[in-house]
Image (cartoon, rainbow, N blue to C red):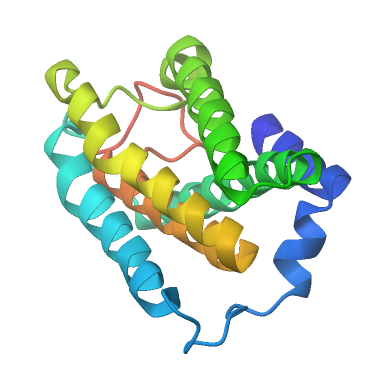
Length: 193
């Protein structure tokens, strides 16, 4: 919960929350060249990457599905981490004017942070055991990289922070569902089947 609060505080400090909540869900005219194909591609990448590919490399270790835990945790995780990503993108875009460079620098910063965060803390102390080691590279190349690259391009071109956070939230809701995230109000190891 501290991580979620820090992400949201950074969102407030950076101005990301203001952008997320002050702009409409659709920020470009649908007739804008490339808008509809790129928007659809982002949805497809999220749904295929996290609804089909990511689960193939994920084990539940017999954890039962608790829909309330999945929804609460997935929504908190998705909204807060999506806000963190928008904060990094916004700070990057305030320092760099070339759009391609904003995407490139944001894409370097975010995976480096998330990769280290997951390897050194999140996957040890927060997330239940769920990875099939042989699938980690495939999850990164076929789910995480396409997600972040396409959605960052969309965010940069169309300034649609709310839609970006929605995509990250859907991705993390699906991840939470497929790993059968246990209720955070129960001690790990004492799940009820």
